[in-house]
Image (cartoon, rainbow, N blue to C red; front, side):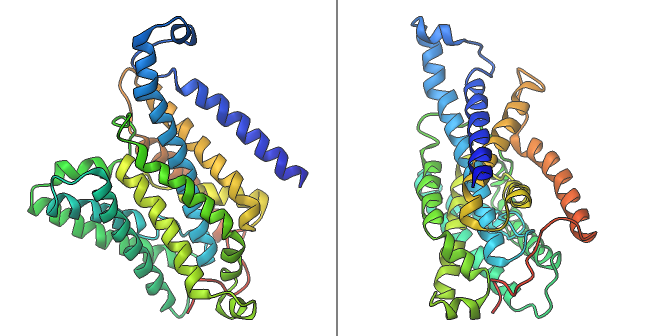
Length: 334
């Protein structure tokens, strides 16, 4: 208990320090004294651009990390995530459908399409792996990657056919450069979704132990499974609509946290959210300073770091090191 409180406190302090520093990193330089001295231009930049960007980054990091944690718990596989579970690809297809069928639609209408597609794609992925008789820890995410590539191929085909490639590019590469006041509020939906995940954390743990175990404890397996997958899909879709595709967060952050804190969802949920927000925030700050005054997309920074960490986790799993899958019969199994 003391270790849990200590780690949460350390992550909170680090996140607060980095958050404060990020407000003053950008093309336009200003300081705290400029704000308090009545510099209206600095105050406008802070309120219209820097603060909304910070909030979007925090919600993205927390949301994607929690979404990955939920999917890994329900599917009993530490390599399942919104990236390897076709959730991100499905959300991108939903956004493209909104652009094709309702070109003048608002951000919230596009979000509705993304929500629907992400939920449907995630459920189909789970239905596919439930029908795989012999499951391997690496095979399940490979199925998800292949399924995601199929969806991605359909998305790219439609984009080329209807000359929507340029319009779709904003949702294919994750970045926060266009996030500002009036264009980030949708991602705040992540907050109540994370709260719902915390409320049902014990139910997700039970469902993660398998259908028979859930029935013995009086928990509706299918209802809780679909609830958890829906929460993860809606979180992912919210992020995709605002910031685009940001891979690996939902894969590596939960793995790193559970390696040190165990697999109990409620015990790791807070630290996973905090560490995810810190990871995305630091990655975004790196992207802003590496080639300043220009900016690298966060998808590039997270992709490089995430790929390296993913390879290390995969090597550890194949060599029998680390805790990446439980022994018991798990969720997402029919």
